[in-house]
Amino acid sequence: MKKRPEKFNYEMIQDIVSHTIKDTQGLFLNKEFAIINGMGGNALFRHFLGKKVPLLIDDYRMGIVLKGDVHSNINLIDHHVTSGTILFLTPGSIVQPVSVEGDLQIMGLAVFGDLPLASGRMPAILSGGVRDFVLKVGETEFAWLRQLVGLMWQLVHRLSWSRDVFNSLVASLLWFYDEQYRASSGSAVGISHSAELFSRFIALVNEHCRREHQLAFYADRLCLTQRHLGVVIKNVSGTTAKEWIDRALITEAKVMLQHTDKTVVQIADELSFANPSFFTKFFKRLTATTPANYRSL
Image (tube, rainbow, N blue to C red; front, side, top):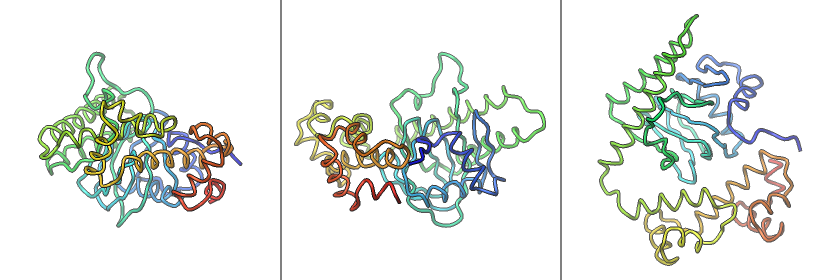
């Protein structure tokens, strides 16, 4: 099997642009960053929608949905993203495109290298406690964010442009996203201890699912009994804690099957299954197909 890129990074985008997408009018791409302006995101999203595989995000992404409805699974959580919504993703996030309605128009930024921030100061969303968020923002805030990304777009299309000015705009965008996240977290009604516990549980599952398949591990890390954790997760999400763990495992398996040339035996071992037979039965139970058949899709 020919090895394909594991991560949705600069190299993958460049390969897609070079061989698949003909109209790149709404996309600016270099090895340090990418800017999407309007319809530039539509072709990329539909390309991945056709492949039906999860994407590993290897950098920071900030998006603004201008038009259209998007259904995606982000770090195991299903999201219906509509116009007036902003998105923030950190390295290591896993995104599964599901569907798109209407003509999708997005503005956004991906930073492939180091973030241009002054030493000693860092927005809270970069502290490690936030993996992703999807927020509806006010009309005024939405317009300001559009203007910031629009200024970046205009700047990089000048014959001669200042990197210092561009870095300042990126830093401003990050701080603005941070402000919106903190305002939402601080003023949201009904943010309970249970909801916070669910978020911590999902973060642990994303981090440890390759090695830890049992609820006992996560209950111990959260200093709770298995029964109490199970009840909280079911009440908050409508899905059992074990189902969340299984979903994370399946996502990891799909990424490895589609984006590496590792054998089923190797994947079973890396995902801590007792043997390949157990892994195959588990995969088929959750996807209705075998790992080998899924790889050939």
